[in-house]
Image: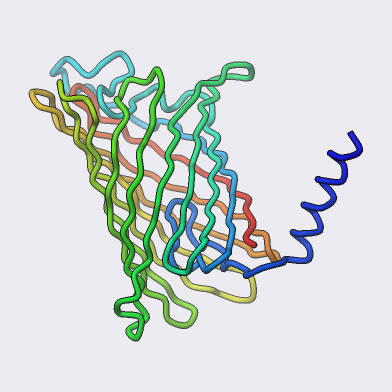
Length: 266
């Protein structure tokens, strides 16, 4: 017990003293910001996400699963809340490794294991004189007892930062490992932000996904909304509110959601 207390105290001292290189804080709630992953830096955050439906349009075409979704989620996404933890460590200036874990909480005592997503990201030195930061990344979205299969992911990103302003975009292709009924997907995210005054950063984020499988209908999502973050030394708090559409084989969902986030950078 005493050793455990010493370990906690040591961790607190590290946070306060800040040994090693200090990372810049992420300006976005949904995207990885390559310019913030400096050598020997560490970043971690916790998200609490709520999604709710506004309108459901029945297309009357049949199919799509009991959750209204098939490959992508449907009305079941609107139950309860989702928890998401992620952490990033950059051993080198051009290399960073991260992991993200999501957990679905349908009600007070019901938790469902979500997606485990480890990722390796390479930050490229090209175009630095133009304030541009290109990156490539690869990872695997590991799903257990899920409707969708596990998938491999490969993507590219491009960020531009100049003064108080920044823009960032990412696109990733994913494909399942199963030979039969192979499922392919595309994920995309984009955003821009500006540092208003002192620790306050505001921005706009857009995100979406598409899934297609041989012999199955095409499905896609698209959402967009504003983000507000407040930086507190090594810590930050943030919120994002978004609205959009989920197009499924037999239904179209119009919905909204919000994310609250707390995080820190070392």
